[in-house]
Image 1 (cartoon, rainbow, N blue to C red):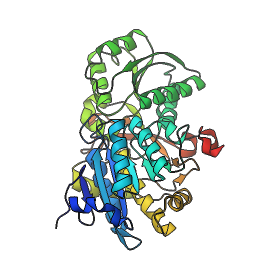
Image 2 (cartoon, rainbow, N blue to C red):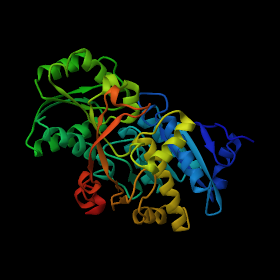
Image 3 (cartoon, one colour):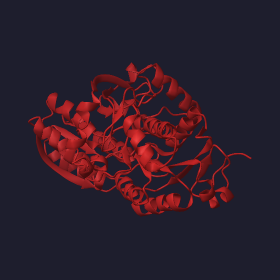
Image 4 (cartoon, rainbow, N blue to C red):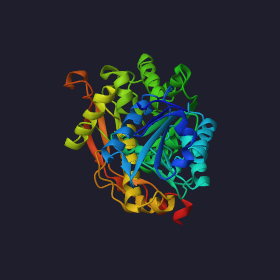
Length: 403
């Protein structure tokens, strides 16, 4: 019988059928992983089905089983709704035998699911959500954060632009937890470097018309317009900024969370010259290229840091289960915080006591069309941002568990 899709969309290395889902508690001795993300909305390209394929690859690369049992994967679209995500997570943990949930694009969703995981004493590994609160004020004993966060992005892109002369800022901020955190963290970096924040405007998630917001940014005369948004919102705001002559008028755009997926959607003509920070680039070394080419064959897309991070988080969880000799959450948490992270995503990454996975980030500039040698050849490396500089220590993170 072929693997297929059932409740909420299911893929399994064993047999994925509705009847198996109904008796999932009886399979509690196996390991089941859930990918919960946006598969149809503003962040569908940012994580989406490519993240699902990346998790499948991790399971296959691990060997398809752990502790003598098959590994299963379930997946669902949370539609960027925290209440829906919490309902799915609760059902997965309570009745479908899910042991760990990962990806979790959208900060409001990630924070909501992390609370459910805490209540159920189950592990969640956030990859696609950005707020630094996940391993800061909202940290839990079972919560982890992979790939990046708002603090690291602020240090990378914000710090670099101030050093380059961009010492006055105005923010276009998507109006929910992620945007607020990204604006705050970047503002702190800008001010610490001697810059000024002249103002900010809140924008709805998944808005199509940025005209009034861009006019406010333009009239502020700030040297830098900081885009504290992501996914389709970033694409729309960059396109419309060009139409309003923002950059032609001398202001710089700082895309504070822009990934390879959005650059691909924009095209090099629109995105050229943009400075951004990612923790993964497919063409960085032999290991990243080998992984990315395999994923490309499955999806037709090169992975960004969220999709590569989901591969890493899934693989590291399985390594921790194997090392613990059990899938008991407390034992696996201990191993996740002990084991180094060495894979296609990260070399010599490590996990802090608050659950923050620390690895290097990279400051890139988007190439001009004539500089690109092939499809997806989009970035020039400007600088490496050491992980220990990008992220605060556990004791400085605001996580109450580390006090």
